[in-house]
Image 1 (cartoon, one colour):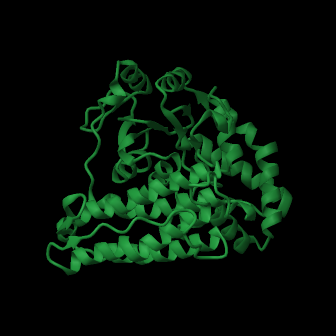
Image 2: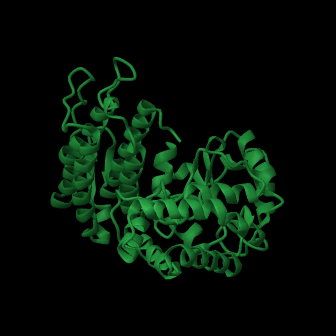
Image 3: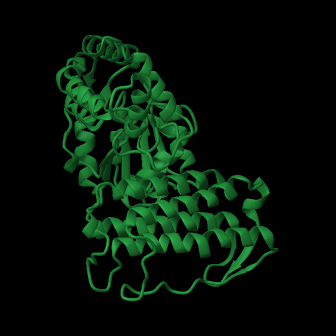
Length: 395
């Protein structure tokens, strides 16, 4: 059952062709920064795009990656860079509205999805800061406040770009659903369709006419007509679990965790939302302990032994017995990310045949390494959602 609909923005909900918008945007960037700093900046921005699309730290937001590149290229302070871009997006960026046009079906589509109680995600390529995304939503004639959506992706809250399947894994973890409970709707095969499928989401490819391929697709009007059919979202067949999903899931979940921990106040780490619930730091410490004593060792055991028996781990201690593993939750999360990197290194070295190696689980019965690796990702999402509820940070 589909619980969340991810909607691309540019050339899906808003006509905004790269051939005009990006050229106009870079031209405005060069004029603004030549006047302000004496040099154009468009070439530096292309370097930030390369850095965001490349191999990078799963704990670092796209905005942080871009600031580092601009800082190194211009030798301007981070504060000076941030101030300059705030002024650009406030004073100059609104002039680019003339490059765009609203899509007639977009408003009714969002209203219909809300009536179906779907979580709405604006899944635009997170290269721009929040203000630029909300401005473009307004240009599209759509709600332009965070409260209108389950999540709006932008450079300040995401850790990957759309070319990474981990971008989609991060979204589903932040929204609190499983990949097979989401559908991505967008026009770009390499940004919207292929990586979303790799992450285990269903897809609908927006094209100028009805799709002739085996991928569901058509115009936005076609998608609108589909969802108005009774129970259509309930009939979407979820993708099968594949080995290509695992690394994006295990990576994107860590990014979702760090996104949720941004600006957590020090006194929140030890607070319990209820006497019988874990505190935030206890949740993160459980993820850390599970990674080192259960999740990775279990995968290693399946590879090292022939059809091993996997005992179910002991129930974790309650909130009054659980020990903290670090002075604060942020440090605990860093340790968890370090341990997850070891798991990722192990998974990357697997052979394709290894994914189907059998095992016997005390609860699940006959299983495979693939199923257990996917269960590790599900375990992440369970506790990320628990943490979300504890911190009041649910998107």
